Amino acid sequence: MSKPRSIYLVDYACYKPPVTCRVPFATFMEHSRLNLSDAPKSVDFQMRILERSGLGEETCLPPAIHYIPPQPTMAAARDEAELVIFSAIDSLLKKTGIKPKDIDILIVNCSLFSPTPSLSAMVINKYKMRSNIKSFNLSGMGCSAGLISIDLARDLLQVHPNSYALVVSTEIITPNYYQGNNRAMLLPNCLFRMGGAAILLSNRRREKTRAKYRLVHVVRTHKGADDKAYKCVFEEEDAEGKVGISLQKDLMVIAGESLKSNITTIGPLVLPASEQLLFLFMLIGRKIINPKWKPYIPNFKQAFEHFCIHAGGRAVIDELQKNLQLSAEHVEASRMTLHRFGNTSSSSLWYELSYIEAKGRMKKGDRIWQIAFGSGFKCNSAVWKCNRTIKTPTEGPWFDCIDRYPVHIPEIVKM
Image (cartoon, rainbow, N blue to C red; front, side, top):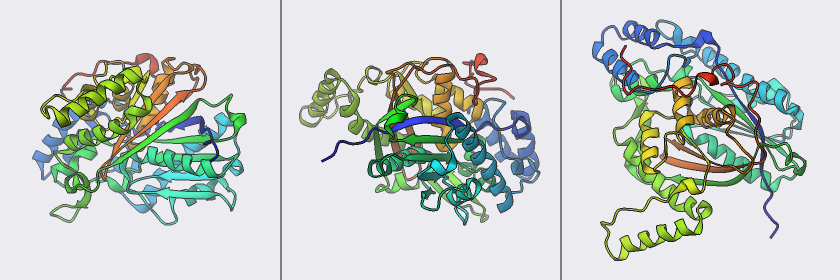
């Protein structure tokens, strides 16, 4: 059996929305009052969520959502997709010097907007890519789809030597902005914002010297066999026939269970022997001696220098910080990404990695753990190793604001 090929992350780029798309709290609430004038309780509910969300005043929504009422047309959705995806790819191609025809594999993931022709076909058409390119379009896989795309790219690069793989992760907001009164469906309106990222992977040996990271592990956990897990993030119609994404109250419990399963798999791959022995001892003890023993939480700080936790919301970050016993600095990138950009779905992990780089904290040999959750219900992890000390970027999503961060985020922002 041949030795697995090393997979390198050559570089990546995150889309930065224009200031014209910003949605300060006052604007968001004014639009909510006008759009839901006959449902003041729903407006109050959104205000309470926004006050506790952890989002800041500079997050962005696409132009179609700025209209009163919103105009979520197919044309507007395509415009948003082109703006976000093409901007990220253009930036990546400029940074790497790679030409579109050099790309052998293309993977685009967008959970809720799946037009025909596909978004991957849209990219091929725009950049006039080769006719023999291997293209894939992933939809319906939620906020953890970015790491699924990385896993798919890894598998393809194992069997296609001397290749480049372009991964694009985004979520198109325009057609999915809920306009009803169901509280469980109003939550995403308060949290999800514009964003996207383009990532260039390669198995070419010559890329080893300039690549930023090397992919070490990808671990995927799927809890879809359980009915509650399957339905905790669910697209459906409300009582008035309006389509939205429903987030159930037991979402965090299910996320915690899926994380435990993921940890059980990834732990032996990354933890030092001492931590593995402690974890194994406690696991056996709970099964044989006393099931009421408190589960041992391995010290993952011994395995990783940096943590990129999906910025799905303040509750998600709080829960993982508690469960993994992380410090405030370990979750700083996640909290600041949520504050500056909101929940950008599958691309949030790359804004977080960009934050760590912008702070000048990424050194050669550092290990990074990316953790994402998504509908289904899924918990996916990727482990990277820094290939070289990363210089502070002179461009990128944080370039003009990194000196202001970290900022204090109060428990409640009174409006």
